[in-house]
Image (tube, rainbow, N blue to C red; front, side, top):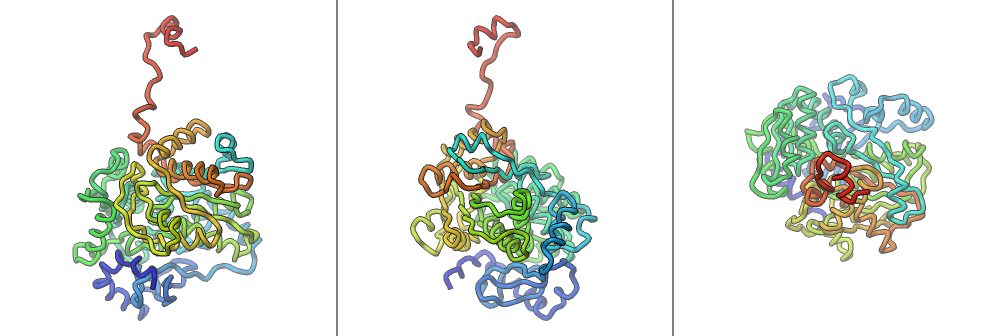
Length: 447
């Protein structure tokens, strides 16, 4: 099976997880939890079904698990009206997520329903003649899209009786877990590479949980967390992106739901998405497919494009070489939030890009910085380095003729530039320093 390598991370803790899997199969967990329309877990590779529980790898083939649903089919107009009458956050989509029906009444950061910016100035700069939008997720509570996925994982942690929230993180997720845990009353202990941007370190630490730096890159951190899950030290811990990963990933679907609702319940023609693990891209595609199935949007072709940094581009390398297997790389890029050298969902990203007629491209660090400035100077949106990757790749795709500039296109900004000031600090300072006088201002030559 070509994706069996995807589950190496999961398999590292399967020796311990096997006991959990056995319990879940006989129904002692799945029968006692309320996660709304979620009916179970299924393996993406072999289709084996499991009851709801804190498992993430198939006991048969080690393939990744994802949530299955009993979706509210039959009356799209009534469902659309119910969604539109809901709260202005992701809980308006509760009937489509693995959360209890009363989720909106529980303590949460209530992320989502961020701005879809009509980016006419950026469109002009990039040569886009159709409509161009930026889905700006820097408006979430901790200023990244990670608040969405963590909010869903918190509900799973509640359902399964965990007392500590944890994660392996390139920065944004650490802050999102710390904040969500503080709000929901969990203890938190999160793990990051030791050399992250200072803004992300401070933001992750301010919420009062434990913040642990690991000597190494993100993949080293992830391996450590997989070992901790299999140790008594990790008992009662919900790792949002490991043993709660099937639920956590579903939060990214809300980006698809919001984009389509904000476009007047229409699919975009093209969407450009940054790739770290690849989960966000695959779940956005899942969300779009669910909206089609539910009759909430008209079924039509759409293209999905993936964006990576050149210094960590295993998926774009595989795509352009025509490979089905994604070979790991050692990250070396300023876009640290995307610096996952062994992306778990990489092969699924390849499938989606090829199925939809999209592409996976990468840009170098210089192009990332240039793109951050372009977005800031055209739309007033200060993106972190991941946003620079997405805008930079969009520019490159247009220049190479791979993205049609006449179609409706949505690009994602997943985080706030205040977290990655180092990327643009060198040449984004004061234009001039003058004495407080008009003569000094005139002499500076600024008018």
